[in-house]
Image 1 (cartoon, rainbow, N blue to C red):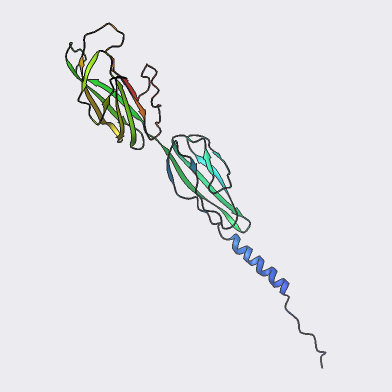
Image 2 (image 1 turned 180 degrees about the vertical axis):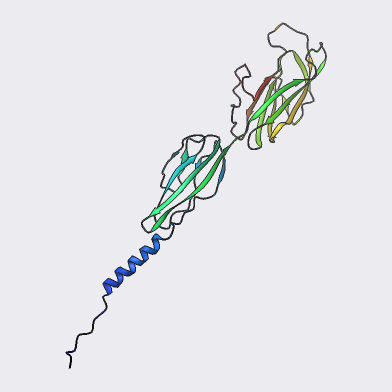
Length: 246
């Protein structure tokens, strides 16, 4: 008769190690969960905050793939970090999540910085009028930017060689003190010559004063950032495309 042997007990510690190893192997076969968030379209004056999903496991990191400038991330590991040093154009950012329990994975997001490009052209119905003639002046506004321009304000200085300012369209008003015609709250849609501002003025007797027959116009405000000019900064030479004279 064989000598009875004690019954072998299962090695629970070994089983636990095997289970943990199997779970880790399964994790390594899966990609880390990653979501860089929705694409965004913003104006130049708006702060830029990214909107990635917080990783369930692991750590995320932002990098820049493309764009018109080299940006800075306030905190590259923050899924909602602020981005600085942006300029008009389109950026592509990548959000990469990595951890020991999963394979690193990445997702991208696009951020477009848009603006308006207001341009002005001044025209007169008669460029060689006689004293007493009524001249119709037209300011053609174009917007060659990315979005419609809103909250646009225009100012036209009427020189002392003209009087009897009448027939101002689009709600414009004339100040006898400053001799400015002002339009406010305008919307300038995308395209060429999408808004026309007109008024009439009567030619007065010349006095010999320099510039007494020269009208000067400019954009003085808009809700959006202008891509290549600054409102209300005319220094007398009408050097920007949102300024004009005739």
